[in-house]
Image (cartoon, rainbow, N blue to C red):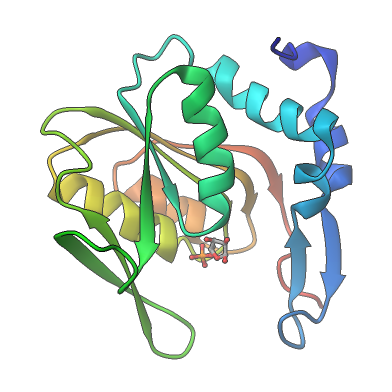
Length: 188
Ligand code: HSX
């Protein structure tokens, strides 16, 4: 049974995200979603908020970003009755892949998708937990474009509005939906 979005507030979800100072490095205020996931009530609220948004949007497939996007994306795909595609960090997928690199603060990373994961013209919803610089989400979106998928939306729980990630994603032409917007990825 779905929890209707009006039954519990999105603010309750915000309060359930644990903030950890100086992790994984000094100056970062880490936003930990595991308290949401380990609560049956809040995990359902999170997934159902997204189910209500996408249930009438003719989604063909949900893609999720490594690793927290897998948790949310797979649950959402199951409820939408569509398949799920993992976009993994480089070197983890066994079949033929396409790859997209992106810049980190120091150096570079890459994500990959199986070449048969998205069919030409299929309507894809891409999911992750949060948007900071936007690099991960942008790389995932690029992979979907490379396979000829149509991006319905990029979705995440949280967008840090003091960083440029959300703006950069929207500027790339992809619609972005975040349940929560927050200043404060960086600790002053
Ligand atoms: C974190 O980095 C999250 O789980 C996301 O996958 C990603 C967001 O950072 P960014 O690429 O937007 O900077 O591990």
